[in-house]
Length: 116
Length: 391
Image (cartoon, rainbow over all chains, first blue to last red; front, side, top):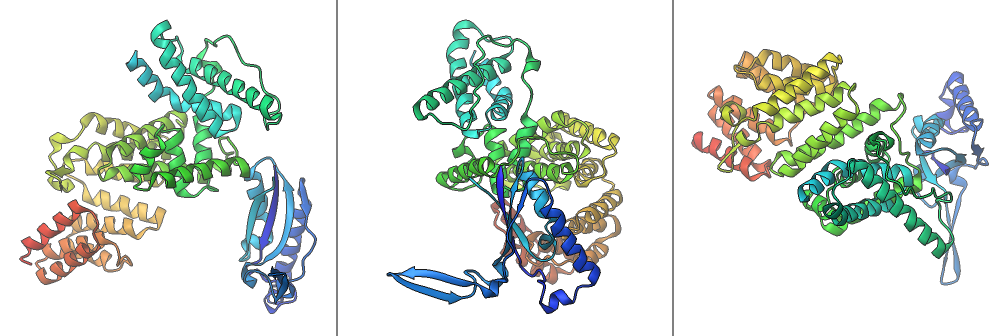
């Protein structure tokens, strides 16, 4: 089975924000180490790093006119902060990996989507 | 022959379906093939006699039907996800052990936490319980198309999301088992207030789980508790009115079922079970004693409250404490609970206040309970209480 794991940041502190700076060096180190361990898991294809959702532009086309809005399609809190792909035996294996993504235990949530 | 067929259907359907789902990895195909096998049995068994091992016969027949079906579909569409179709087995296996019991795999799949609880309940009743979609819809008071849709979505998700068909590994088992037991208990509770066939279904599922997982104390605990509660069914209402335990006619209790319940509890305790279902079963057993040891019951509710952190359990403890140490002691616990929307909190308060002779407060409490009640028999019970208090 192939899965896409969509990382919803939620309230996860992001580098460059005061919340992130509020973490101890040890905590920051644990987050980096956590992502590294996830990325090195067999079957995992890491996603490309995304800039923060407040840099996003949302595009719609109505009656042939291009409408752009500043910001992500959903609320900043629900925006996608990252993604990766996983080849796993079954949903249990995908769930297990999702629990190891640091954002899952820092106020974010991981959406596990099977690919067809 | 009808009786043999009925029995085979009741006893074997879950096993046959589980084996087919395990083999095919597809719920719909497995359901169709199982149904077909039973239809063939209904036609052949009266004519040729029932096979020695009905279960094996049914699995083999269903399997061959499914393989034929896949072949036909493949010739038609030249594509299927089941690329290596096994050969149909022509000879009927004669050894019951060649047909593995995969009902546990099935129940863990149906109760996987990636499915919502309603879907888990519906799917468990549909596959292991053998209830039809209209029956499940009626039992849960939802429209038939809604229930059908719920089942279709759940089956589709199992396949598309890759929910595994297996008994979870040890590190996942405690949580997953809790989910399975919760589903069975939920079905039982739906059946507690009148819809008897659901309670019977929950008991059947409970017995099957106890047989399949003989070393899990909580499984025996749940079964013990259900057996003992259900044994009092006939005594629980009189002319449509609720009869509280203390006023029940004990001769209406099902003593054989109570004995079976106590045996399950003994088994759970021998396995050193101390989980929430075992504790609830122990409480149910103590409630059947005459006289009841309310101090012991209160202590076990205390243990259960610690395990579950539930204010509803604390309310039950308050009732037991009121019986052993007097109404004031019970009231003291109740007044510390944050359960203002719970009708039993108010009816219990009303009862304790009545015993203390605080009539006006008791009336207020019963009125609060009456405003929250939705069950007709309970409504009448509360109205009787209010009348007795001269309201």
